Every structure is written in structure tokens, then in C-alpha cells.
Length: 351
Image 1: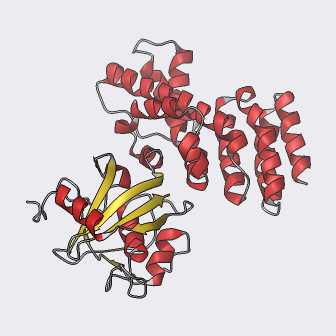
Image 2 (image 1 turned 45 degrees about the vertical axis):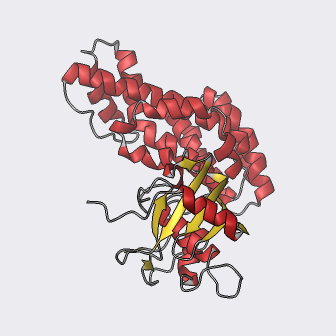
């Protein structure tokens, strides 16, 4: 059945039949919900060449379908290149829209409305004073309205695939295109955050109260709330020699921060440490691991006693992304002492 609807979709593209395309997309998704990973991957491989052959708005819907197939278990790699290229095209045009809008009106760009033809026509009317041709004004307005929809499947595949987070096709262009519009579009911040996620990244972690040190490897962590929880789990004792006592987090918190479901009734996570970088600055839980600066070429995190009680909701910023902190080794005492001698003294509470 999945092959049948994929064939039908391709025929609709060949026939340039938008109505049939739009009718087939949800039917294909319905058939995909009962398919296995191999069939889903094969379907994704057959969809990648369609993007350049369909109208802009249908291409956005096709992208959402591809993201949904990846979420069901298909390998997103066959469509990663087209999805990112289409998104980059869209963001570059959206950035141009914002610039032209300010020039034409002197005001902030309007709140985008997804896939609304009447809204697009009305907004494009105001852009023609930029000056732009009517066709160019519609193209820019379409990009502005579809940017979030275009971003959705890329957000999905980046959560699902560490390989793509590391080497997504067109990564540098995507980052540059996103930079042209991000200040105007807070709805794209989740995409920006995913492009900064660290995978297979080494951290040196120093527990100042005990003088102990650790080398850990992190991956798939969306923010420092998640890092905080998983660090406490990775470094907690008392059964393993050299680990920390009294910091073991509730298993529910750990599951929610790693890859498990979040129990709505789970108690708030309690912070175990105050996170500080090697230069003495506080590392805020609201930040990201990529914000932690390097010291002697390595990201260094110092664990100080919490100056006050912190708590936050369990879970993770990106629900489909598996987060991990793996303890690679406990540092020998002399190595830990050498690192502690390099870092700045314990910081006070920022003013």
C-alpha cells in the first residue's frame, strides 16, 4: 500500500496535478504508519527528487511528510540534502523579505501566517513599493510565511540523526541563511539550537569540593538543564570508586533527560551543582553545552556547591533527540589537581 501511494504521488507530480498531490500526501502518511523502517527508508529515497518539481507550497507540505516518515522510523539521509537546500533557499528569501519590508514600510515584519493565499496576496501588495515586481514580492512573502513549515522536517531529522547533526549536507549555507533572519523569527530558534548541539564531545569535569576530576563524553544534549541532570547521574556513587556521593538524581529525571518518556506527575528536578567554566564564569542551565569555553583546547566544567536551591521541570528540550553523558575515565589525583590549579577560583553569586 505504501508503494501504491508513492507511485500515485509521483504520477501526480509528472501530471502537474496539485490537487491530486495534496490529496495523496495524507493518504501516503496513513499507509506509512503501519510500515517498517526498511519500507519507510525506501519511500524516502523515492521522494528526494520531487522537491524541485513541485510548487513552493506543495514542496513545504512534502517536506513535512518526509519529516514525519523519519519520525516513524525511516532513515532521513536520502532526503536530508533536498530538505536543507529547500530550507536554505527559503530562509535567504525570508531574510530579503524582512529587509524589503522595513524599506517599504519602516516597520517590523508582520507575524507570518502559514499557507494562506489571501494573506500572502495582501502582504505582497505592500512590498511592491520596495520597489519589487509583483512576482518577486509574492516569492519573498511566500518564503516568509513558509519558513517555519520548511524548518519543521529539518528540526525532526537533526534530532533523530547524530550523523546528520555532524555532517548535514549544506550545513554552512544553512547556518548563514538562518543568520539572516533569526533575529526576526523566534520560531526558528529551535533549529538554531540544534545546529549547535555537540556530539561525541569531550569535557573535563572537576568537582571542586572533593578535588576529583572526570573525563566525560557528551552527545545529543539540548541545554544545560539536561547536561546538569545527566552529569549528576554519570558521576554519582557510592558503589563505584572515585565517584560522588549524595548527588544521584531520581531515575525519573534521568529517563526524561536521556531518551525516555516524561511522567507528568514526576517531581521537579533538583539541581545538584553550581556549574562554572574554567574562567570562573557561571554556566547557566538555560544555556547550551556549546557555550562552555575551552581551556587548553578542552571544554572544562567545574562543579561547585549550589549557592541556593534550583529546580526545573523534568524532560528535555528536544524530545526526539537522545541525550547522553558517558563517563570515560576518573582522572588520577595528580591530573585532577593540575586541572584545578588552572581554573579560576570559585565564583560568587553574580550581581
